Structure formats: C-alpha cells, structure tokens
Length: 65
Image (tube, rainbow, N blue to C red; front, side, top):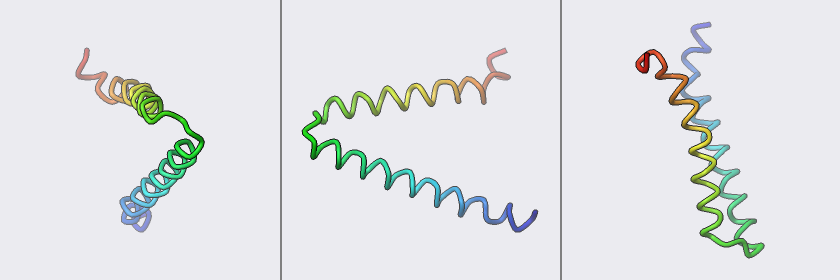
C-alpha cells in the first residue's frame, strides 16, 4: 500500500496530462469543423461550472452547516 501512496501524485499527473491532451484534440477537431470559438468557450465554462459547483458543495458542506 505504501508503494501505491507514493505513486499517487505521479498517476494523478498522468491522468491530468491525458485529459488535457484529449481536450486539445477535441478543440482542434471542433475548430477545424468551423465551430465558433466563442461557442466552444461558452460550453467549456458551462461544463466546468457544472462540475466544480457540486464538488465545492460536497467538499465544503461541513463549513456550510
């Protein structure tokens, strides 16, 4: 178990890099298909808000009560 705890930061960094690569590929494909950059940015902000608000509420619910 100690080995897994020591590798956790490295694995999380790898996951973040893979996700970022996927986002860049998605944006490149969308822009090459003539999707508006403004629309892509709006979707990006809406999606990030939809993900972050529940996470913030879940992790800080003790502070809210």
